[in-house]
Length: 333
Ligand SMILES: NC(=O)c1ccc[n+]([C@@H]2O[C@H](COP(=O)([O-])OP(=O)(O)OC[C@H]3O[C@@H](n4cnc5c(N)ncnc54)[C@H](O)[C@@H]3O)[C@@H](O)[C@H]2O)c1
Image (cartoon, rainbow, N blue to C red; front, side):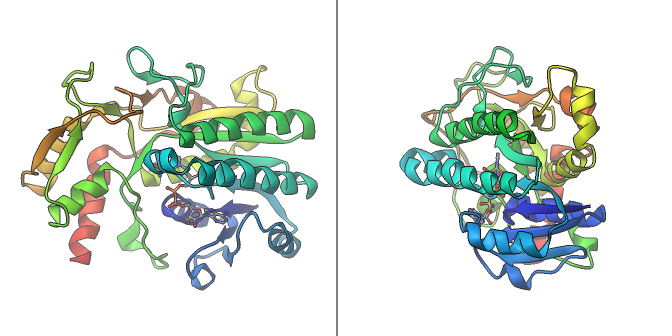
């Protein structure tokens, strides 16, 4: 089986590892860096912008046995999207629209897309299922929501099938990094764990908690932090179980599935901080700041539907992600 993977950033690199580990051939595109020098068993790397349809076509000509696409080459960041909505809608909606249309013209009918938990509304109790109400609160969240709607319409009109993976908050690094024979250049995400690492390294002086007056057990926001390796494995499970996922989902799902990809565990910011401090054996300088505009009090994933359909469940805990990331930090120092 050969898969086209777009985007080789924080998440894409980890998906590339997981595909390679499972002997799934992958053609991998990204428009920045020296990706053509990357090497992983079973992977072909190309420097290419997904909006350059001529270049994408040439790559598809070379690899006319691609059966499925994992589309992750989109931009993220709630804060940046508020300041730069044009870039977010251009890349995540317009760019992806023409790219998927090309896939359809080339007869590639199975598509997995990187969506986000930010499409959901704030719900009582904070746990969201795939049927929970949607109400994205930022241009980033809305770009993902619009792209999901667009993919549904494409599936209905063009006989495509799509699995949309709604990622929660990926953290950490590749769990197997130290034992790998072939390594890609490291790229970490931009998330709470990376901020704490920067403070630990003395690159920032304090950690600001954005509000401690939320209606949660300790007043700080609840999120669902998933180990990046678990998220990458969810993509592989979606590839391997693509057709059966629709059968297992039930008769109302003929061509489009949204699946929550989270740890299924609710963690407050203060609890994250305590876990981090326990692992580093030191205290972090903390200040309570105001709430951020656009934030919600809490959100975490019910992951039963992903378990049922793609036969995936997370293997790692938040502590594993922190330990893996801290181990890398010690190596770099
Ligand atoms: N990181 C998160 O917390 C998070 C959460 C939810 C959803 N997502 C989604 O997951 C996907 C991957 O996110 P990430 O954290 O790895 O981001 P990232 O920025 O680290 O990686 C995205 C990669 O896509 C590439 N890219 C962007 N536009 C491109 C284009 N037009 N053509 C070719 N390559 C292009 C970038 O160069 C980059 O390497 C995105 O769709 C993102 O919206 C991420």
